[in-house]
Every structure is written in C-alpha cells, then in structure tokens.
Length: 495
Image (cartoon, rainbow, N blue to C red; front, side):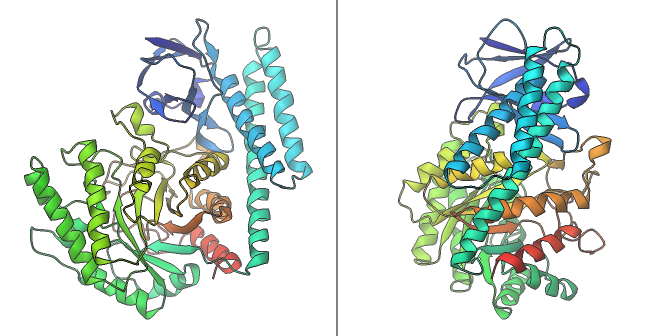
C-alpha cells in the first residue's frame, strides 16, 4: 500500500469535509481509490497504487473562494510534502504550460499577464528556498498561488477575447446554440421577453418521471406547451434528456422492476420511442440520455448502463434518421471514481460510444460548478479550458450544460443531495459572484471551436429542483444579475 503525506500548516484553508472530496489521480486525470485521514497537522493518503500522480483537494484562496486545485506530479517518499507549496507548484506548472502552448498558437500576451506570472514565480522561488528556515514560507506560497490564479484569469480573458474576435472576423455573429432549460412549468409571460432576448434556443427537458407518473399513463401537457412556445417564437429546440439515470429522472414505479433488466429496458425504450414520435420534426437536437456514467438509482451494473445507452441511441435513430443526437455526462472530471468503484470514466465512456458507430452527433458535458455531492466543485478557468480541449479530441461537437449557484442556504425541497459549496466569510457565494464567474466563463466556452452549444440548465430557483440557487430567476421570480450578463454576451457575439 502506498502512502503520501501532506503537511497542512493552514488548517483554515481546508473545510472539515475537504478530505472526503480530495483524491489522487494518474497523469490522465483518472482518480485512484484511496483513503485520507488526519495525523496531527498531516493529511495522510493511503492507496493501493504506488505510481506517481497529482493530488486534488478543495482549497480556500482569498479572493477566489474554494477551488479544487492540484499539485504537480508527486512520487511516494517518507517525508511529508508541504501542501501549500505543492498546490502553488502545480498551479504554476499548469499556467506556464498553457501560456507557452497558446503563445505558440499566436496568442498575444500583454504585460499584465507576464508581470503576474513573474510575481508568482518570484514568490514561489522564495517559498521553496526558505521552506526549512523561514516561518513565512506559507505566506510566500500563498502569495504565489494567488498571483498564479490572477495570471490565469488575465490569460484566459485574453485568450477568449482574441479567439472570439478572430472568429467574428470570418462571421459577424456566431451560430452557437445558446439555450435555457425551461424546466417543468410553462413559460411565464413576464419571463418570455427576457429569455428571447438572452437566448436563441431552449431545452424542453421531457423528464420521464414527470411524464409517466404511473405505468402506462403519460402526461405531456406542460411539455407540449413548451414546444409550441419554442416553435411560435422560431427558436431552436433541444429535446431531453429523454432518459436520465438518477432518482429525479426515473419514475418511482420503475423500482418495482429493478431486478429485471429486460423489463427496465423495455420501459425505457418505449418511453424514448413515444417521446420522439410525439415531437418528431419539432426538435432541433435530441439529448437522448444523461448521467449514465454515474451510479443509477436502480440496481443495474455499469455494463448494463452502457448497454442501455447504446439501445436508446439505436431506438432513437430508427425513428429520427437526420436530427442530431447527443449523450450527456455529468461530473466530467470523474471525482466520484475515487470513492465509487467504476471501470470507465465519462471520457472513456464517450470514447467507447464514439467508436461504436451508433450515429451519435456529439456529447454534452454537465458543468455543475460549485456543488457537492453530485457536482464538480469549483475549478479555475484554465482547468475548465483543459477539460474542453481534452473532450475535443473525440472529434465530435460538444455541448455544455452549465449551472452555478448564487447562494448557499439549504433548500429542503431540492430533489437531490447536491448542495452549493460555501466559501469563507469574505468570499461568499452571491448573485454578484455568480455573475462575475459567468462574465469570464461563457466567453471561454464560446472561444472553443468544437463547442456547438451552451445551455443554462436551470430556469428558476422555484419550484425546487436539483442544484439549488442555480436559476436565472430567484424564488420571487426576479431576474438575477447573471441574466443581464448572458443577454449581453448573446447580443455581442451570437445570432
């Protein structure tokens, strides 16, 4: 059994549950199963593997809140690593590697970025050389990390701006799908005008549990009205996900058959066939299945989940030959693999499906940022950029389904256990913080050549659903500041 130890002199930078969310991963980012425990001020990781890898942990950074950061590549050794120094080292390595790569592509890097990088390097060098004799080592490492994250923000802003400007020189406005998930209620008149200004598309969820509340009894009224609204306003319509393999997506009565996979499969395919036939030629893009990479609420195996996903695509293609179809994955960094035995990560599953010649047109990625469990936690923009670049290697179009919280209070009526991750008192999760993140994140998404769509995955905070406080409208129906940002981005860059 391999052991790696981390000295943590700043316990205020780690929440009590951070050890539950930390993990070690291989050089491809695939988490290893392991166990973390405290021994005084040391965090001890035990794992079966003894290969070198990167350590990921939620870490509080002043001015940035909690971010999941990673170290550089670490080997096993008897002496403990200094966690603040290794997180600064890992962040600097990611920054410098991406900076060099983008410069080779022709990115013009302003002095502000170079100055922030130089500041981070200088303070990091001081931290490393003084780590034995100076009590200020932690402060130096902390300063280096903050400077590196500031440089990342500046660098990503420049990358997004320059790439989008270049693309708009070829076509004035981008044709990227820019959508909002309409949820499970009819669109209110007072919201309609705001949505049509901000978005050029909409997603009608067609959630199975909402339609077939009892076996063989289907209720389509709400979704019929949503599809008619989309067609009346001549906006592109995403249908689905038709099947979502979590408790909120599957009808309650299906649990009666969880020991009989063939019966489950027949019900699933019947719903897929009925939904597609009902809205045939009215849907622009079918989101056929979602969250098939994580554990289903049913007692079915990972192999059965993959088989079911393939069957869904096959049945959908038998009815709709030309309409594009995608499969969507949540938790794309695969954090859950560290604690849940799974053979394949989301990327590996997508690669398997892409090679299967089922007629898949692309893949969706859920970025449920700032939530746990069930979400992806908060990541810096460079890490999100690297994730999208890796998924682009599959050679198929990408769609991002995005949500991030505007608050952290407990929502007792939420459908899932996912909850917003709170920050330190000085870095509270607020509507303004939600807006500030989107001001930078969405342009980064639009800069990616392979990205075909961005979907804001929750319309309103009420009625309660998964991912609390992630709506564009609060519980009183008032638009949040983030809607202004999405409207501005659409008007500047999109048709």
